[in-house]
Length: 361
Image 1 (spheres, rainbow, N blue to C red):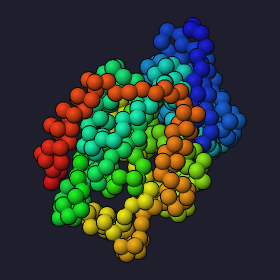
Image 2 (cartoon, helix red, strand yellow):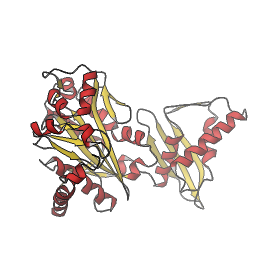
Image 3 (spheres, rainbow, N blue to C red):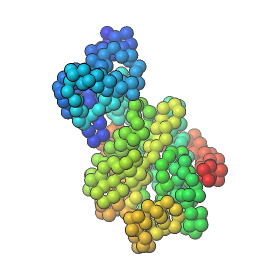
Image 4 (cartoon, rainbow, N blue to C red):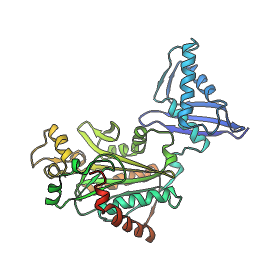
């Protein structure tokens, strides 16, 4: 039997789950689950432990969670246990902690993130750089990275699967000189004027979100953002699949792309102080969304970050970076000449290419 292994998983908005186990002949042995969660009745913990004993060490998160749920259901049906209540955690959280103990899943502190100050780039170059950094991580050529976007020309960045004609009013975009870029991740369109929103990209190994659904991985990767927002005076929460909101409404939206080879691109755009009238003339879908909220006047702004923090954009971004540095291991880095060259090549051949931009007409 191997030495004892330990893994932990903090459920976003929930409790900490810890697992201690050994491995004997490539199977889980002597599994012990603990944590600050709530579980009733107490005897259910023994059922959870025993459900995992003897399973192959390579068992995936879904199968581990399924075994726990099946054994708890069986114990309840047989009358060995009354109805089981799990608060602050679930079987999937236990499974993720198991995978972390075995080294198949990783936590934030298992990685050192490189902060990249990439300066001012064209929005198409930002989209290209996201792909370059993600593919490099998947190929083992670079570790996880964190960076903010800075740009000067106004743009609409649409999701990988959105219809160009349904999302963007071509005449409005031309009238205001708004560039249209299609990114590689899914999600909705972002109207981005320089200085009027806050966008960041996070590239992480797939092991960090091992076994998580898209929905749970969004909340997991943005949990630090809620802490950062709280530090500038905004009490926020995750809403729906990929939105961050406060009591005053939506603050930000997130998007993701998972690359073959084990990289996850996760980026977020927050509205700092957007010209709602201009946005309504450029984004077709935006007209419906904002008209529902009564935002029709040219004097209206979409400014949840500015109005709720009362801080300059640069100060908010600096606070966000300080929070990220405090919570995780971060080192400063720079792009290599090869990365810049590949970014430029990809921006020219793909993200500036009308065929890519209109691939979903």
